[in-house]
Image (tube, rainbow, N blue to C red; front, side, top):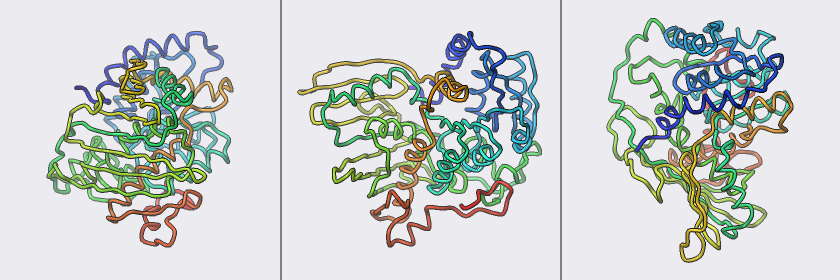
Length: 430
């Protein structure tokens, strides 16, 4: 069964056609001028889609690896007939007052720092998930967006997917009764990244800038590409990679606009014998106290088990007093009533071009708010960070949603933030 990433990549051609149709009526004088920061794996998907839009001009591509930078230029030139400016320093993009918006598709440890710099420079921001490397960063992003008044769209494209909007509408209409619990799961077979010794980075890579405000570690060949997310200095594990998509949809259906008050997580490396630092097996439970009414969210992860759960490899489910709705957010959903009767179902695919369109509509004032706001991204990313903190400390934690700290627990509260090195990208007040 294909993973979500393969599914999304296989949809690029179809999505490109949809993007072209969606923007065909756009006035050329209203083009949004964009720069794409970190056009690697997912960034290339964005470039392919943005390149066929008539309402967008890709002015810049920016990457610290010259090989990726050259490849990104070719993607844009092939799609548009015009080569964008290629730069290694994102600040060059931010300093250009003609640039309206940036797409931040860097590794996770750069997501919030890069977004904060962009907002300060007056740019609208599309930032990939997870929005943050830690809880404090997410709060800084939410506050920076509010202060700037600019649009921030998080790369959880399910929020712009029509068949999922129908599912959420059915939940809000009470079709499964009072929803007391939800579950999200991430099950697929990841690769073993092996064990590697430190070496010199490739000549094409400015590794110092790649590390940015994170600690400057020694380069190792199993760090790039993409495997940085398994290292604590740069990512937050697969819960914050693929898992956050399912967690975000689960929270959306629960109608949650706050953090949980309690979390417990058991996790570890049960399968892989390699350099990965985050769990390959994880079970986390979160409890919400909503004005005295409690709800529960659970998350399961097995990144060595490519088997479907309730019909979907990765997905989420909501359990109500009158039924349940089970969803594979890049595949479809099924709604069950009393006695497990199938009442309704729908199939579909994630709508990345639709997510782009919502972002640009907000920039032009045609839509009031982004479908995946900075706050929504912060809430779902915080779930990932809370699970990881509980797992690291090996105990149940009590969390204060207002202060975003762990009351009377200095050990846990210390993990709300991270250690930065002195760098031009280091967030202030972090």
